[in-house]
Length: 69
Figure: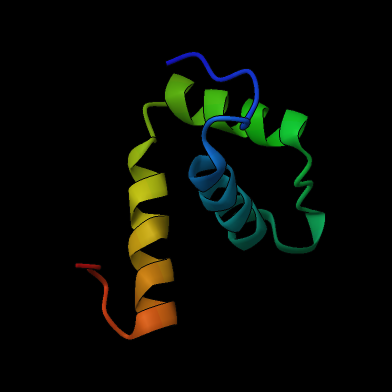
């Protein structure tokens, strides 16, 4: 899937932002251009699963439950 902006996918943006902040900590850059570059890097390195792990972690930290529903 080609992502050029987050206009139609704000959930992906939020997930990428969380992932980038956790991964790069104080060096994180969370503007749209850098988040899109990180998304393409995850695709290139076959690491999109890292976003699902991030979502699971966020759910656990927010709800105390790793699965929503």
